[in-house]
Length: 81
Image (cartoon, rainbow, N blue to C red; front, side, top):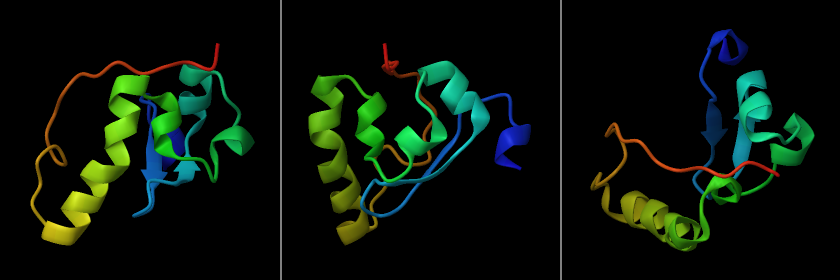
């Protein structure tokens, strides 16, 4: 089902570790599936966002308060190259 999407999709766990990735993600970002799996999702984020991402996730998991989760927004992401 992930590979049927025309969008890059990632499935992460509560520690922000990539568990699944679709082929479009590999095409868009330039990493292989093997390079993605087991890595922190912040690998595709600009440094100024990546340094805060894990803390945002921890806050959500501890409080249940959604600040960014479930919202639609456009963000900058980084390719391998």
